[in-house]
Length: 404
Image 1 (cartoon, helix red, strand yellow):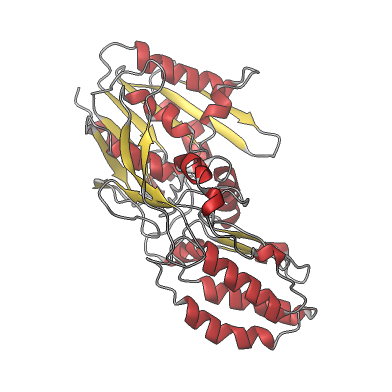
Image 2 (cartoon, rainbow, N blue to C red):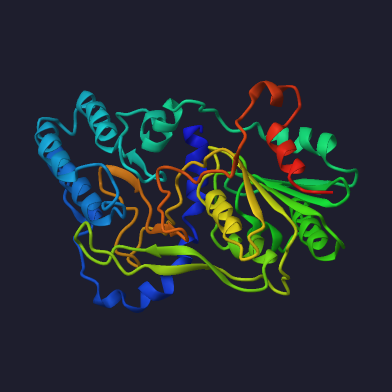
């Protein structure tokens, strides 16, 4: 996945992901120990900059109990190396970038990103994403499917006449687009490029993307005898957790548990809060959808795209099949860098942002898929030649799984 593309979507994701545990953690926040927050360290030299970062990670990072990195060994190795650097020397600042890249290379948090706050390092090089670098080296790696394939190729080739598509441009420069329609008159299809569903769906000013979502939900409610549903979150970089109840909640009339989350409860690396159930809640007037559901996801499906895939697989009706590729592996929820939680992202005077998950997620099967991704029921690999020819093997497999 392109680093900048992933980073933009990660920034969308941070806004509301505390919903799993925010009420519980807020109620006991006063009892949690206060820590010396990294941004409050004096960092006049590289020794102090390293201390601020190392302690920030030591206290805030949520995955220490499953992470392969020995953080104490990191201190022993890199503390003296940073001490030899001059924070005002451009060559040494660039060398520090290399050290940060080495220190973080095995971190399991697949949302993890680090930005250096220095003019001595070019903007394109200030962003370090360990998971992005690892993914680019794995066999079968590919970039995102071209958005134009979803927007311009799939509709006329696979959808019945009458499909709808539209986009919405946000003030921050990002774009949301969606496509929905029927296949063989009785399979409902939906694709969208990011999880901003609630924002678009409830926008006060009507827009074309809103029309797509309204069409989808109207067809879901009013079309008699739908044979199946295909939800396509391939190459979707995530977004708002609140969309889970809107999208998946429209398919069930009862709340159900998809797993659990926990946060940091103290300064120790392994000081955790108890696991708290994470649930999907039914949307207003929702009915249980019992026909087959196929979710399409790929190795560039991350964050909310992964959690949505997991939530669909956990539906009480047990009627969802996951087709495609193992997902990215970044499903630890995030929240903003304030004092609500005892961990998560932070800054220092030398680091513009240390972007890391606030919570750890455990799926209903008891497994943690952070860093490894969620596996498909039926694997259908990315096929560039087929896509370039206007054919979609993954979508065709999904269609074949829905009996007529």
